[in-house]
Length: 451
Image 1: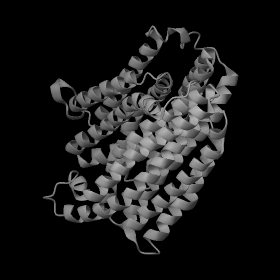
Image 2: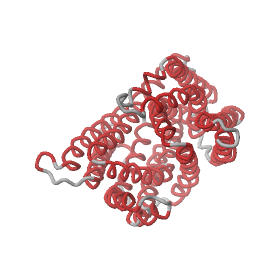
Image 3: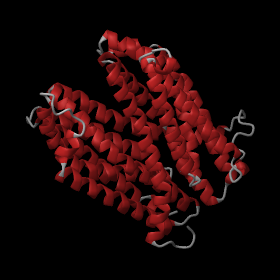
Image 4: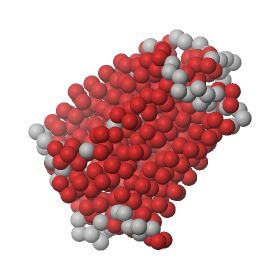
C-alpha cells in the first residue's frame, strides 16, 4: 500500500480476502447447526446436553482464541515492514500459547459436570454434557491451533485454503454425526459421545490441512514456520500474550453479554426465550459477514501500519466500514420488510406455540434492525484496532459498554419499566451503540492519525 490505492482497489483487496473468510465463518456455523439438528432428531436430553456442553466449550475457547486473533494483526504489520523473521516468531509463540491454554483447560472439561451442576443445571443433562466435553475437550488444543494458522494464512492473504479446510471439516462432521450419533452404516450408536467424536475428527482434519499447507506450500516455505518449533522465544511470547489476552477478554465479555441476555429472557418466559434464540440465529448469520470483513480490515490496516502508510490505513478503514455498513443496511431492510418469513423459517407452524413465538420474534427482529448497524460498527472498530495492535484500552471500553451500561439497561427496560423482550434487546442496542462509538473514536483519534 505504498502507492496510494483508489477506494475501488481497496474494496477489491478487502473482498478478495474477506469473502473466503466470510465463507469459512458460515461453514463453521454449519457445524453447530448440523450438531443441533441431528441431536434434536436423537433426543431432547441429548440436544440439551450438547447445547449446554458446546456453550461451555465455546466460552472457554473464545478466551483462548485471543492469542490467535492477535497474531493476525501482528503478522500483517511484520509483513508490511518486510520482517519475515518476526512473522515466524509471532506465529510460533501464538501456537505455543494456544497449546498451553488448551492443556490448562483439560481439568475443567473433565470435571465439567460438577461445574454445571453448581450453576443450577439439571443433574442428568449436566452428566451428559460432561460425557460430551470429556471427548470434545480433547479438541481444544487443535481448535486453538487452527485459529492461529487461520490468522497466519489470512494475514498472508491466503484465505482460500481456510475456506476449503473449514468446508471439508463441516462435511466430515456431518457424515460422522450421522454414523456415530445414531449408529448408522454399522458404526456404534454413541449419542452425545458420537457428536463429540465427530467434532474432534473435524478439528483434526482442518488442523492437518492448514498445517500441511503452511509447511509445504512453495510460496510459504521461506517462513520455516515449524523449524526448531520447540525453541522458546520469550520476547515474542510476552508480546503475543500482552496483545492477545485483552482480545480474548473482549471476546469473552461480548459472548457472555448474549449469554446473560438469554438468561434474562428465560426469566420473562419460554416463548420469549424461544423467539430470542431464533432471532439470534438470524442475526448471527448476518454477523458472520461483518466478522469476515473485520478480519480483512485487520490485515489491510496492519499492513499499512507496518509500511508506515497512514493514508493507506485510513483509506482501507473507510472502505471496510462502507462495505460493512452497506451490507448491514441491506439486512436492516430485510428484517424490517420480511421479519415474519425469517422467523417462520425456523418454526413448525403446526405447533400451537409457533404463533406466539412468531409474534415475539417479529418484534425482536424490528429491534435487531438497530442491533445490526451498531453490532457491525463495533465489530469493525475492534478489527481496525487489532490491526494496529491496540487491544488493552479497547478491552476496557468494550467491557464498560457491554456490562456497565448494556446489561443494566437491558434489565431496567425489560423489568422495572415493563418493556419485556423488546426492552431487553433495546438494552443490548444501547450497549453496542456505546461500544461502537467509543471504539471508533479510539481508532480515528489515535493510531489512524499516524503510522
